[in-house]
Length: 431
Image (cartoon, rainbow, N blue to C red; front, side, top):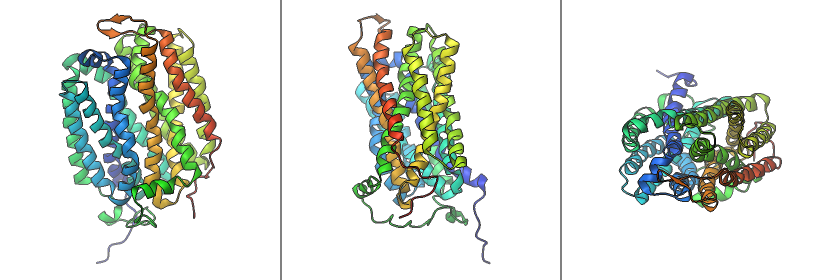
């Protein structure tokens, strides 16, 4: 009996995609977790601001390094195996971090975590390209950000309360066990393409997309960078994401507790509000971009608003707390514009390079926090006045301003570069 070929049910498609999203959620949780454990990490490992910034950035060093290989492996090997292996290695890295006796072992654990969860976003995008209709691709990218921010929100007040209750090491052990369970679920349930379950694929060719079989790693990189939009879309998102994750992911809590007199849980809640707004903004910008049929205008408007918001938050002293929160929420929402860059990049190159260009764009995304977190820490140490409270260095408002100016500089560059991109009108590049 011949089976009728049809598109997969959306419920099944989103479930397959959602299992990949679970790993991205875990990766985002691990990405920002140090932000609410700064005092514990500085005391346990005797860290300065520069050293703490580097410890947190170990995640980003390996994450960035893995992006292009991940994109090529997603094209050639398939997301199921990548996501399963990534989740398993992330669990191991979390255990290494939890039991670290010194900063070097802690850094190695963070390095493993970053390298392994680096497969999550590109794997999800690859699954979306096969399992979801084309018009839902940018929405899926935005929903991915939403899922990630759910993980980041858990790394705010809930993580702070758990750390206070049982200690950061015990929390990390529990996190490793959850990650192992996700690895098993992905291997058991996820499939690379609907054809493996008897459905018709949404991909151009679910087996071998044109030109996909012959590229080496370096060849794939060279090819995607032949297209001018790739260069620009690689550089732009680092300013957006770098500002969000440098503040909410590491330096926001100590800044707010020191200069606004807030409790750690209150400061963590404000940083979580920024991240939640970012999570909401991602799907909204993705949907609007698809609906309007344009990428460039929304991307540009989002960056202009962010520049204004961050300038007020970081450069105007002693804002009323309600205004501070409102500005962070608005700025975070408009930071969701960065999600446009993935669909924008995918449309700027031939379809067989979709995994590779997604990896390149995501590498640019993570370059921001990778460079800015330690750079802000370095600037804090340069302007440190020598004050120490309970074994933790305290930094002046001028020191924070000096560090945060680095964030504004990159975001300003990103805003300018958007105007040099070529609009795709939501249409796939044709040779």
